[in-house]
Each structure stands twice: as C-alpha cells, then as structure tokens.
Image (cartoon, rainbow, N blue to C red; front, side):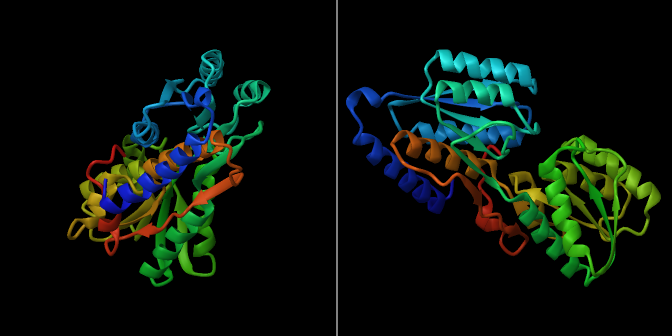
Length: 317
C-alpha cells in the first residue's frame, strides 16, 4: 500500500477508534458480518480482503465473512446465520444481483444497520451505501474515447450482462452519451462477455470477424478488456485498435503503463477503496454517527499519464 493511502486509511480508522473509545466497555467487542454474494473474482475478493485488513487495526473487531457462491437463497441463509451470531453491523456486497429482499428484510427486522458496498440493492432499506457512480465513469471513458478519436471512427462495446445489470448498462449508457453528436459509430457485441477475460476474448473475436475497421473497444470491466486485448493481438490489430474499460485492477494498470501498449484507459472503481470505505462507514455507524445515506466515491479516469499514482503491487485486485 502506498504511503499516502496508508496515512489516509490510518486516519479514518483512528477517527472511528476514538469514537468507539467513548462507548461503554460492554459495547467494545464488535462483530461485523461481511456478506458476499460471490467471491468468484478478484474484484470481490479484493473488497472482502480490504474490509478484513481495515479490521486488523482493531483488536476488538471481528469480521465474519461469508460466500454465497452466487446463490441468492444462500446469501439469505448466510444473513440469518450471522444474525444468530449477533453481529453488530452488516456490510453487504451484492455483486451482480439487483435485489435481495428476503436478506434485507431479515436484517431490517432485526434492527441491525447495513452498509451496502458497490451494488446498491433494490427491494429493502439500508443504513448507508458506498460505491461508484457508474454512469459518471462511463461518461469519463466516453470523453476519453471521443477525444482520442478526434470525434470520428468506430468503437465496439462489450457488455458484461445480464440484460438487467444496471452497473454495466449505466457504464455503457455513459459512454454512448458522450459519443452522441460525434461521427463515431458504436457497435455492440451480440453476446455477453460475462465479466471475464474468456468472455471478452470470445466477444472480441466475433466483433473482429464482422468489423475489420474498428478503431477502439470499450468493455464494461477490465477483465473483459484484457481478454479482448489478446484477441486483438492475435488478429495483428494492436496498432489499429486501442481499448478502454472500467475498474482499475492492477493487471490493467500494468498494461496501461507499458510502453507501446494499446490499453488506453480505465475508470477507477477500486474494490479495495470501496471495501475500506465500507468498513469505516460501518465503524462510524457503530460509534453512533449519522452517515450520509449514499456516497459515490471519486472515480478518476486512469491513463498512461497518471497510472503510476494508482498502482499498488500489494493490492489483491
């Protein structure tokens, strides 16, 4: 972790710790229920790890982490199990689902505060949410693409899916909004990249077979664009096509910093940052604070000009 980030999060942890010190002795042992729909991918693993790392600064804080392996019914069961263990606050990472009403209802009925991270789930109340403004990130990437193409060219879009995934659709809608009024044609991959490198590779191969004149590619996350980049390289078109995406995982930042790479930009959506912010929000709530209901974290566009500022070789994401 970079020195600046260490100092920033140490200060955040210290503020929460000082507030906790004012609580009665009986209130000092804290259990945090970290509920994950899935720990399938580096993004979600990184968020879970960030919460645990922040908690490690407090000897009286225990994080009970679960993995529902993508099963919403299992997520609800995990919530009920954690309630039986008398957790003081929940942090919920809903991954790709849009709603988990049964799980949220169980939490609300028990009167336990809940902080949602990354995904703002529908169908239930929450104490606080911390995550990205996906539409704004898409707009930032759209600006980058439009300027780099000087307002003229052809860009392909690879979506993660499924169709009702608002995180992905907000990102793509943001990109498209910035391409309107230009002479840039946008073509959308016919299938879903499923947020994976393999999916991005497959969709890119399909796009290249039908669109030999592409100038750029936008993917709704980094992993798909890393796969797309390989397909572009295999086709011998790295000098013709540049790519841009969202997330800012370390593998992507390496590519962006690499001399001669066609990986142009990514919009920062750091699961490490979100996990740490979610932990500190939960601690503030336990300490009696009244947090902002919903907080969108800053999401700068990362290019070769500033990638070193965000690169952290120790990051799990």
